Length: 348
Image (tube, rainbow, N blue to C red):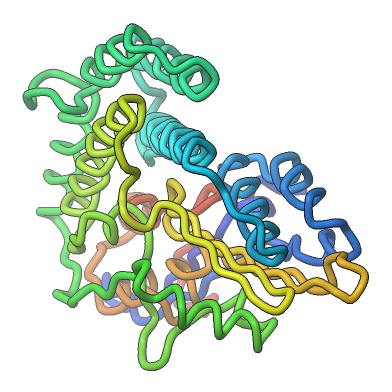
């Protein structure tokens, strides 16, 4: 299997350095059929094992959807624990991708990798053993990378400066962003319940919205603008983790669940955006239907926000153009590595 076989491919057709069209090729398979026939309590266990990225988000979404279908009420302590797990995973996933997946020449600096390791270790420990001392260590590790810190000589400052310098050399069309939010959950639930194909190419009436850090921050734009929103979103997540440790409320829309008539629906605002699970129970109380809509399916819809942003962009040619496409994909945050292919006119 080639390296590209496990990647999201953005195949951009160019004319004189401008993107005429983009085709997205995804290797992602629909995991939903694996859940059919299970007891609801088994769904959360399977989801946590099945997904290598955001396993806590997937597991909690499955558990919340199952509980909603069964009419099970959740106490305040369980909600706080789940919120802390979701927030710690969100920050960890975003930090890891920021350092390791950013399209660049070479590897990140060894000292930044050590800071990342420290942060990930603390984020794994905090939900099991909430502790103010660990929170102080987490602030130190993320602050050294550039979160909640004065912009200076740190990883995120360098990354943002690099993005801004490159953005000055190419042009994205000016387009208004459309953000998915918790207010859209009702429409998403209705669409998931009636249409199995919705999971692969989700859209709302007249809309193909985006989700993720940009949506949470309410900011679109080019690579540097979206990268700044992503950095601010991570900084806000640090604050939300500390608030959760102190017993405060979770951010609005972090975890929502609804159910009736043997159907359950849950929405989780994961690292890459809103993640949806829907299930329907049969007469024996086992799962008869299961559907998942991942954030990637919104952002990398064939006519979705990433494609919409690229069409008409003047990106240049060659290796620099490929990197620009890959950086734009990065700030839309796919669940797998994204690579750009720019076929020659003779191949088109």
